Length: 199
Image (tube, rainbow, N blue to C red; front, top):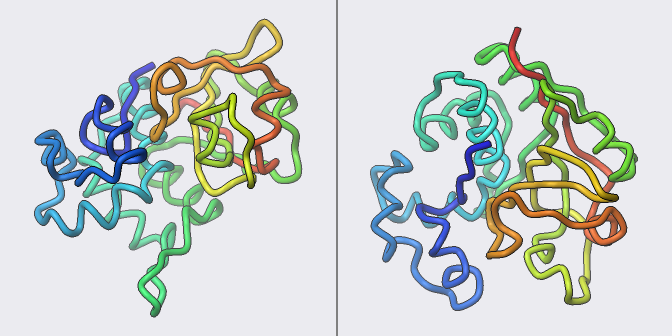
């Protein structure tokens, strides 16, 4: 399962989220397809869901545009909505589901009010899941103040827990990370989506 950071390079995540480093100091930001640094700075911190999608598409060998191109398509389909106050609403699940099914053949099922064990039980050789957790999950040994607000990609389960990629994670909870269900449940907002391999 390919891992991607929502920023240019995985090794830069700790500096960006922990020390407010400029994401554009990482030369890897230009791989994202953004033409302007300010656009990248604005959007990269908001693209956890598209980063999860990118991992899934590449895992299944489905062609797609660079991340900036994915964002352009997502905006056209109402997956993100830029507010008048300059903020962003999104990733909005149902427009996302309609878009990725139409453009990539990925079948999406929206999950609401469902615990992490039930969502993980949906995983199989052809099914992944994107679930909403607090971004605080990058430091799972610390207390958290919220649930939701960030998306991670579930790609396996076993030994009483779940395997996942966190697009804004820091090692050892970044790529192919494992946590027990009880720990994930503290951060989990009980919502998400399954992604099924295109037929």
